[in-house]
Amino acid sequence: MVILGSGIKAVFVIGFLKIPIRIEESRKIIHVDMDAFFASVEEREHPYYKKKCLIVAQDPRKNHHHGVVTTANYNARKYGVHSAMPAQQAVELIPREKLVIAPPNFELYRKVSNYIHGIFADVTDVYQSVALDEAYLDVTKNKLDENNTVKIANYIQQRIIKETRLTCSVGISYNKFLAKMASDYRKPFGRTIILGEYAEDFLKPIPIEKFNGIGKAMQKKLHDMDVYTGEDLQNLDQDIFLKTFGKLGYVMFRRVHGIDDSPVNNHRLRKSIGRERTYNMNLVLDKQVEQELHFLADLVSKDLKKQRQHGKTIVLKLRNSEFETITKRMSFQDYVQNSDEIYRVAKGIYDKLKVSDQKIRLLGITVTNLDPLSYQEVSLKLFKDGGTNE
Image (cartoon, rainbow, N blue to C red):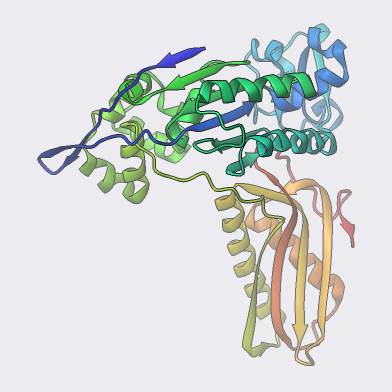
């Protein structure tokens, strides 16, 4: 177990003024991150895999070199394999005699995840599912009546390994950002505590690519500014953060100084994401319908990206001038999130409905059968061999 610091320290710069800010350490936050979750579940079901380099993905050798690594066991990671890597590239990195490729079994992963989340619910009602394999828990008040956060984290780890034969890493801190950074610090089966006094020191050597909330676009801008580590971030003035990155810059400025007030939101994952519009003037031309479908698909795509979701089913809803409502859906084996893909599917459904002679009063597009983006992302084979009408 790694314990990093205790106490209070932070300085904010506003213009030429340095204003000391007290870090609020009253909350007790735990971030639980399952270790190589999909791969670990597969190893549990197939112990033989433990001795191999396991990749969870569609086999690119059987899938026209397509597919993306959802996760890999730690044996495979020694060869440089990581999540989101093209599966074909991963295959080329690992000696053939050591390689095992297992197709994702999402139904099983959901079942195991639900069980683990049940353990979280036994500890606190205030937990936030980020994905199937990770969650934030606010244990400031908890059902164990335990004040020692380390004991609570140990209870969670031991229950998970005893009841599921899987391991997790936990990060303990006074806010979500640091708890997340802590859970990544020692893997697998790690436990790291970050307290206020050494929060800044902990963040100094970490590459900005490892900072939760800093995406590739922001990374590029920071690299252009010769910013590569947490220490480099801490040396930037608040004014630079604000001018360069706006609201997100302010959030990141606070985080690199150990401050994050965001709450643990105990909400359920959304089951669908959609948009619809009702028109005062009915749509009478196919060109008008196409334009609106483009618009709706773009809105839905942005919502999906904002929620970090993608789905396998697209639903088209329309209502004609006679107030008759038609709903038709199409499901695919692969995930969809891209605006153009959503449009093409919705337009394909519309064409098959053969309603171009009707006046359209309402149009709507919804994506259902959602999963977090941590799931596999592969190219969508539209209307060839993957789609099913429902």
